[in-house]
Amino acid sequence: MAHLTRHNPASVHSPSSGYSMGLEISQHCRLLFVSGQVPEKSDGRVPDGFEAQCEQSWRNIIEVLSSAGLGVEHLVKINTFLTDKSQVVANRAIRRKMLQGNEPASTVMIAETVDGKWLLEIEAIAAE
Image 1 (cartoon, rainbow, N blue to C red):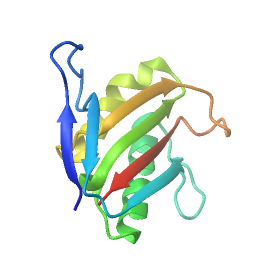
Image 2 (image 1 turned 30 degrees about the vertical axis):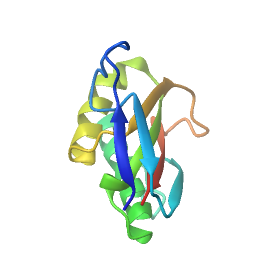
Image 3 (image 1 turned 90 degrees about the horizontal axis):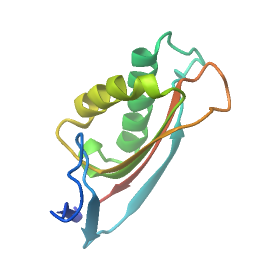
Image 4 (image 1 turned 180 degrees about the vertical axis):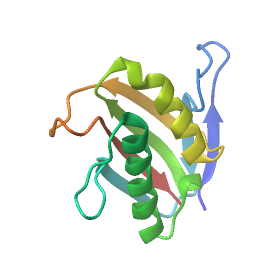
């Protein structure tokens, strides 16, 4: 497994919610780049409401990780694209729950998704 060193220098503001300012990877054998995961189920259905969609996007990420023999503890970077600033608090809570204590480097942006029924998209990088 990759050796991870968190960099949260005192000279920079503290991370506000479950992420690291910098995450150094050493001794890694492989990287997995997870494409943006939208809140669609395998049958194409999209759950109603932000919380259900956020959890579905995370389940999709976890399935991709699992197919590579990895888990959320291997995530080193996540980029989350929300469609509305009002989703930030719920996103943080769900991210914390799904990451189970892991604190990868993280970026959250407000953006428009390709399909208007998707309320977010999450992409990730994992290392082992």
